[in-house]
Amino acid sequence: MDKQAHNNGMHQELPPPKMQVGFAGWIRKNMLSSPTDVLLTVVSIYILYKIVPPLANWVFFDAVFSGDVKHRNECREIAAGACWSVIVARFEQLLYGFYPVHLRWRVNVTFVLLFVALVPLLYDQVRGRKYLLWFTLFYPAFAFVMLWGGLGLESVESSKFGGFLLTVLIGVTGIAVSLPLGIALSLGRQSSMPLVRLLSICYIEFFRGVPLITLLFVASTLLNYFMPPGTYFDLLLRVIIMVILFAAAYIAEVIRGGLAAIPRGQFEAADALGLKYANCMRLIILPQALKISIPGIVNTFIGLYKDTTLVVIVGLLDPLGISGATLADSKWQGLSTELYMFIALGFFISCFAMSRYSLYLERKLDTGHKDQ
Amino acid sequence: MNNDSMTKTVNPNDDRDHSIAIEITDMHKWFGKFHVLKDINLTVERGERIVICGPSGSGKSTLIRCINRLEEHQRGDISVDGILLTDNLKNIAEIRREVGMVFQQFNLFPHLTVLENCTLAPIWVRKLPKDEAEDIAMKYLERVRIPEQASKYPGQLSGGQQQRVAIARSLCMNPKIMLFDEPTSALDPEMIKEVLDVMIQLAKSGMTMLVVTHEMGFAKTVANRVIFMDEGEIIEENNPDEFFDNPQNDRTKLFLSQILSH
Image (tube, rainbow over all chains, first blue to last red; front, side, top):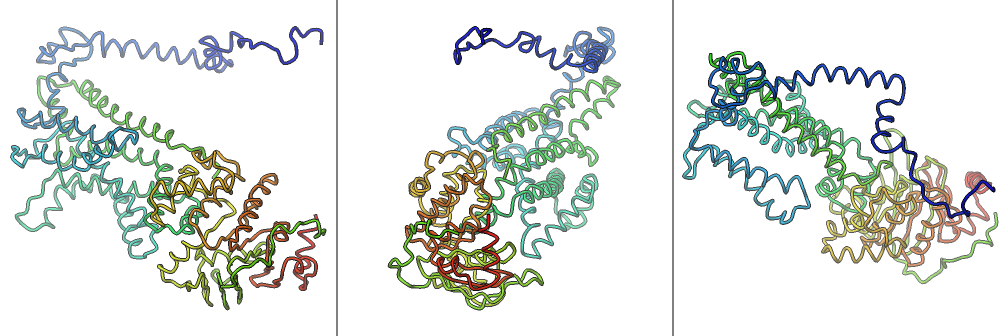
């Protein structure tokens, strides 16, 4: 006991050993903790050294950003890197397609207000959420009029729509409508009414069993045969409907997985309290099932968003369609890497945002009940 | 077995009105081909406290789950508070409003706070305004001695606390009858008492209670009648003194010797 330099219960708090905290501690723990670790660290650094500097040179330092350059050969004369001038030259087309130039402000307004409409759906703590939700409810009609025209606004044919406008339009509409439809289908599949159950199963199995491309072809060609002669039904709307129907089947199955994970006791407790089916589902079962399904739902949404590029095969000019047209132009031939990287960046931003939001939502909804 | 050490905290001969709360006549139930409940006849008077015991698989849980239609019976009649239990959804809804149930696994709603668990049914089934429902919920959370946990989630509570919340949640609907399906079987020993205390207190308040349990101490203290079931039949039915001191049936004797021997 005589080695002890303090009274019992009076020990002062000491800082931890230097090599366990801070930057040095982190490096030691995460990069150099064993011989294999050291080797992996060295190899990783070597690979990064081989890849990053040339890539950075190509993308930034040796690249041409000037919008004054109007031909790929001019780019090559200036520098050996990327020729971003093609993006600058075709930027508006990549965003709007062939939407009339003087009406593009309508697209911009619609796009900005999309976020106003989304905020109350994505965050429940927003001030004035009630009023914002009214706006959200009214937004689809507003967006439709703004984009297609009508009610005194000059009308625009949907064949003029293109670029990221098309991607966001199909993606957001598809996501917004396929979720409720998918929920309804998943409940239908669990229904005690045989007819509802049978119809739900048939729907889900059919749309899951058919490739989206086939559905898009059906939308663009076959559907005309089934409609009365002379009726015209906007191709873009037909495509959006097919994307919705397709995604809803996947969403339904993802949510079914969530529903299956809810213990029977939850249904019994709701029954015993006298809750009706609709309230039981709305208040007890779906909040839990949807929470479990978030990763799967967002996965489906990201898939849907990227699948919008398939519309190019029925002649709609999404960003890939626009880039195809650009590459066919002799002035910009061979600049596919630049175009595809730009489009990839556009998709990555959207998909990464969805992914981060889903993580945020999972954390927010975690109420620490892993044991039940 | 030392019966004298158990103090009679609840007087079985208090002045109840002797109107009938639950009447079950000639009731049968099958799970597929398996005959789980055979010719059940049981009358429960208002304010009566009945403990149902028996070996596992004897049908005791199924019996009380038939009373609020969590299970459907196939033959015979069940009437609760004068309402005949049939396929009529209105009758079922009415009965469920009057009958509270507490489960072995608590079955609290994990995504809602304790308070929200308690106010959900009063708001959506009884259509009470939110603040009134919250007042009632706090009253019952105080009665089960857990008001300070109102804003927590069930996952943050101990098993005993969760079960007390579950009892409060049922009481918030102001039921006339309470069903308990092995309420202490999933609890650690040190938590059983806190739940039983709440149940004893509830019994003192005159609640009609049907309790499936293996807590024989609780049965002796609280029950007016003890029912012993085996293989889907009611084998023996008696007041607790007679039931424990002087069991008639061999199966009852065997069961009691097994459950009280340790």
